[in-house]
Length: 432
Image (cartoon, rainbow, N blue to C red):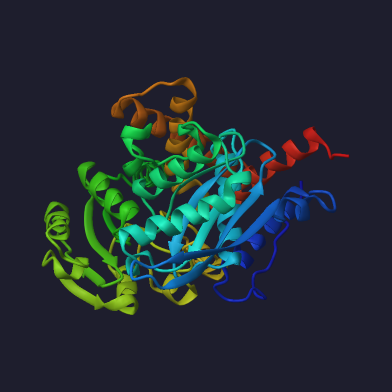
């Protein structure tokens, strides 16, 4: 192993998700001293499918969208990864997210590979019936690549349990019988798992608690700022608050709010249920930024922990220079650019990377698959306990390796994940 190997990020195109993902794989591969060709084999997705999705609007107009499904690495098990509906979705982003899923399942020691899917559109612009049409047409194009032993989708940005129910039904109709294990994150009534909705946020909070413990920073009493108040960020806020933390700032696309004494999370949730379109409309705190640009002010408040829980590339080197926290926990996929990582490392701020920190979601998805295969249904406490237990075991491996090799968590996690994948490639060999 070449412990001092370092790949410079100075030539990376700024804020490109795929370049960031490939950079981190190469960095880990060079640290491990992987033989020629193996790094490229690991970086290259196994298959990338681009599909055209024609559909009719409710008023009869014909339209079409473009979607992708990427199987990055399936050496250790079936491909696993979410389906994203967002106007910013691109082929490269989906490949990058699939690479992250491969690392995530390897770090968590789950018998799965990495995948991701997405369609480039804003789901809020379609009616429920139009959204169902788009989903079913997309799934119909993917049928040969899906299956409990091939590829198992899950919700991601812009999708939810209802979308997964349509995925389940479209696939099951094509094979002639219901196949609950073809998708996770589906409704409980269709074989979904209790605890899935909160799992990613729960895992992120547990990651913050475990990392903080190693720093002498207790979660209870810590001030936390959270960027993103969707499913991950909102659950992280609720669960961290329940464990005694003070949520001093939250942000979404509408802006950011702050209260040094701690925001009333129950009030924010109530106002959002009553129709508030953004946290800035809840009256729960002082508005410190408006709009997407203003939302970035959440990173500058005085706090101990920052949790970026929105989209990728949210924190560049400029924002990283102004973060006042001691600990950054990535609830989102790829929220820090490589340059931001370097800035935070130089400033002595600890970063818990996404490939571990937000792995609670895929962990719970794996538990959902286990229940489907065994025709079992575990209660919510049992599921939550299993998620926490697996997060704790993975952190123990990550922290021990980080200390032994004197590596930051990011590189330690990448090295552990790539080593697991590389070892699997060597043991299986090449065919033919």
